[in-house]
Length: 82
Image (tube, rainbow, N blue to C red; front, side):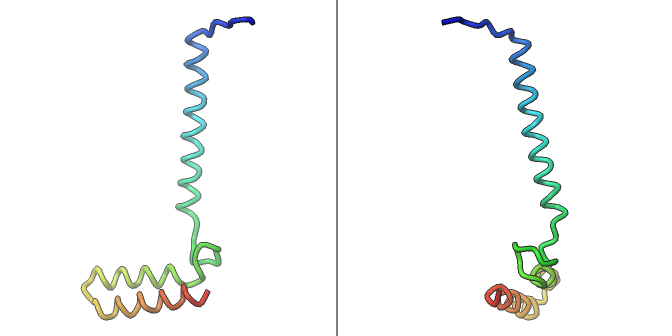
């Protein structure tokens, strides 16, 4: 059996290449998640659900609890219908 001596510089380069590829794949996954718009017919959310949730979040933040609860209820209804 032939034993190979690995040069530490080669090993370091290989490790750096693998780390760079992992970083790039994470970056592309992040960018894809940022630019995905679930309210536009994506299979993740039914159309119109995300804007309704955003509206409910805004209402809740501004202290309009009853309107926020209604918007959340409407969002739950939309998610159950699809």
